[in-house]
Amino acid sequence: MKQTIFTGCGTALVTPMKEDFSVDYPRLQELIEKQIAAGVDAIVVNGTTGECATLSDDEQYKIILLAKETIAGRVPLIAGAGSNDTAHAVRLAMSARNAGADAILVVTPYYNKTSQQGLVEHYNRIANHACLPMILYNVPSRTGMNIAPETCALLAENEYIYAIKEASGNIAQVSRIRDLCGDALEVYSGGDEYIVPVLSLGGKGIISVLSNILPEEVHQMCEEYFAGETAKAARKQNLLMPLIDALFSDVNPIPVKEAMKLIGFDVGFCRAPLCRMEPQKAKHLEEILRKYMLIS
Image 1 (cartoon, rainbow, N blue to C red):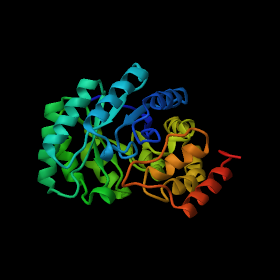
Image 2: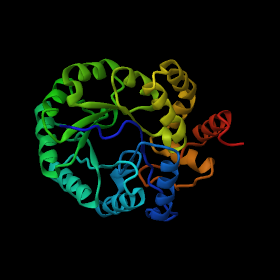
Image 3: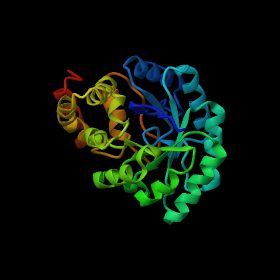
Image 4: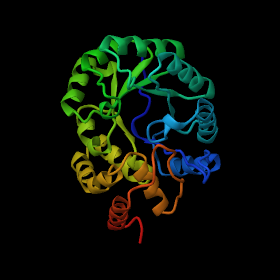
């Protein structure tokens, strides 16, 4: 029987970079410790926010190894293992397993988009090789393709496919997935702007960008909802919306890395082709952080 991978807030961790854009592994350890101390329920590495597209396979493996050692079983470790090449995704997934990941997060193919039947074959092949709990990752705004609810239902039949990170922004689709799949495929919000709406449909939590800077608050929002304090959780969601908007005012993770630098935890800049935040957007982000009293 499938078990819930985590409930609550899983932080989609940034990857700290040095000035020469090599991975700053000691800073990564510090970041993980800060997140766990703040009460997050899972750590997600090598995802979109972690700049997986510009990390080598070796770097991704080392990040998982370090994260596993640092976490030391305190929370689940979820590792990104997506690719638009199925064979490469299989290799990434097996590498994640060998490095000690508790689960994998696998985005849909992108650019060379496939059909819904192609998605079923792609995901089943990865799952059956890795033999690790898998979270599907649906983010059509980045990949150009959507995992249909009916496809989710087919994939939920695989014993290793446990959940989906739903970042389509389509709440009706989340409802349809829940209706078709029930507990055979759990749902995590893939957007900080709709945490509470997804929880209200039976979602298990959020894979969050916001929690890089406000881990306690995102964790508490989920805890409040699960404790029946739904109005309190909704108020927190509404209160945080201007900050969430600011964190997505440029290509993720450009703004969240800028925000972390401003609040005093410098994690460097993003690798190319991502670039420095546009000055006007950076100024607005700084104003928002000041409004939330995150900087003086």
